[in-house]
Image: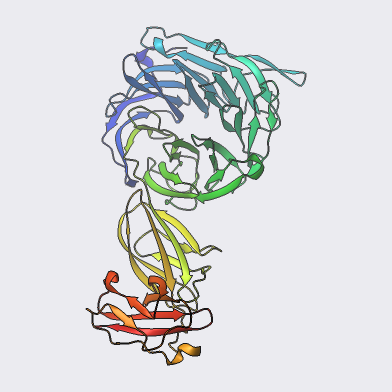
Length: 538
């Protein structure tokens, strides 16, 4: 099973260091290793004894082990030849690497296990396991599977899309003997393309049925389905979860599909929180997403690698990308896998045509914008108000509560326009910072706003007006309210609210407001009447 280093026919013996893609944001290439054959998925392993980092790369004709400790000079140390297959998937458990392949030519490798502590030996120790499995009285021999996942804390190996019955999930114990997986149970309700597991819950991606499913695996011999949840393009290819198990993300492997985020804190009420595409266009196909430190690191075929900041529930923002591929648009060429879990923080990415990339990112947070838009006079929240950040990536409308949330990667000072039919536009300056939430209430002035007075306030005049800039008290003539206090709202000309409160004895202290010279609107109201005064400061 092991080829001599002199005949690693899959490897193009060329290292590419310091290569930069044409399109990138907050991701840099540290090195690249090319292959003569197409490659597929990738995982990582760390030799903690010798402080070395390795990439496990799926190649069309086997498994490649690459030392990436020096990212500018990745070196293949081992190649384990195997059946020819477009699909290979690999994961690790302690010092063991597990690999499966899907449809193949040649001799099946079943579950192929490498003792990684022996890879420096002349003949590394490997195992090929093809267990016999019985489902509903029918016997099968495992020759292939599409994907695998290992819950390292529980010592459980999960195989998905295997040539066993419906191709659901096979659950194996590897804690007892890592070299000889022992079957514990089978979930066979649906074909599962991929999945992840933690604790007593298995999450399956039922690609052909277009939904993901949480599965109760507290009893391994009898997994039971909780519920199903459809995904935006009904082709659920991949699923991953947050560290606190409260959210999951899915990819639909379709042109123009979304990465979607869900609140799964209650299996009886799973809620979609957000969905997003790549900035590379609406015809690109997402592949796999992985959660890392409140980011998603995604492989995106012809768009390469994408990083999303997902630290704000329901507000995903693209903060990084690196285009590994020479192709663009629709298609299954380009980046297959992206692994973000090395201790160095480097990202391993496999481009099917261009090889293994070692990438680095600063993992910059997004800039978050939270707005509430209200009517400056009635104080009612405004639905469907338009928000546009000029020269930025934020735009949209307020929801039914008058609220708006969005984010962008770029920080700095921007002009934001807030508008709504029947109201005067407001243009204001906002300062956005990475990892910081900019929160503001914007008050729009109705287009038909008038200074006409109503009721008993009609004869009450504001004086002195014009008001000298150094004056600090406004009195409303000799009139005194019959009420304990009058409410007031002080606005700029564009309707933006500056101050609100109560007037007592008809007086307003301006000292703390530090108002610049100019014209303002002062709206005064009691429970039944109101009047708006034009206040001129000199």
